[in-house]
Image (tube, rainbow, N blue to C red; front, side):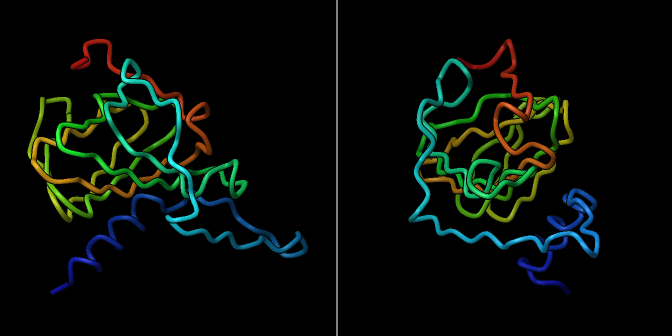
Length: 162
């Protein structure tokens, strides 16, 4: 039987398979990028009207910091915080619930979600997360094929829960 970590790793690997560009011999060797949560500032200017309700968001790896065509992010949702129902026209997204529980927005409404859940939303798929608990929710997430929010084609659902 696989451990929880192995299951999460396998799901994540499946979600990002094929997303990386091929490196060819003779090209300059790519450079590793490393950072730490403590060194990455929280994203400023995320507006409630755009579906970012009381969220603490960090872009750990992105175009600006690492020259990446993808984003890896860290989000903390305090009790009653949420990321409204939204979609990305230009990228796929995954997230992993590392801590806490709440509800995810789906095309069938809200469904419970909690620690250990791995969620994959292909481009164009409506999704989001609502912390309905009394504890923080911590998510690690990523956008494949978009190195910034502008590149992602972000759109909040017109009938979001504002």
